[in-house]
Structure formats: structure tokens, C-alpha cells
Length: 71
Image (cartoon, rainbow, N blue to C red):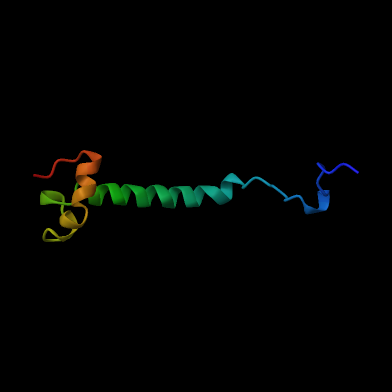
């Protein structure tokens, strides 16, 4: 008896995810990332969607971390 062999019935079945099922999630994730970049990088001044400085102050440290000037 070889101890190093696995029982084939217990091995996981690995099947690739079809691109047609993965593509909508990739598009959704990309849109969320673009929205996050907008709020971190451009949500102030003339391009502001939300009045006031609430969003700017919420993402202030992230702006500096990513290299966006804000002062």
C-alpha cells in the first residue's frame, strides 16, 4: 500500500469558470473601481456630485496615499 496516493473519489473536481459567466462580474468590479477612484480623486470642486466636503474629508487620507493633491 502506497501512503502517498490519494483516493480519486476524494479529490476535488476542478473545472474552469466560463468567460461568459465571469465577464459580467469583471465589468461590475471595474465599474465599482472606477467609481471609487472618482470619489477618492475627483470628488471636490466643479466635478462634485455631493455638495459640501463630506466625501472629501472621508477619503482624505486615501487621496494622499494615492498621490492626489487636495490642499
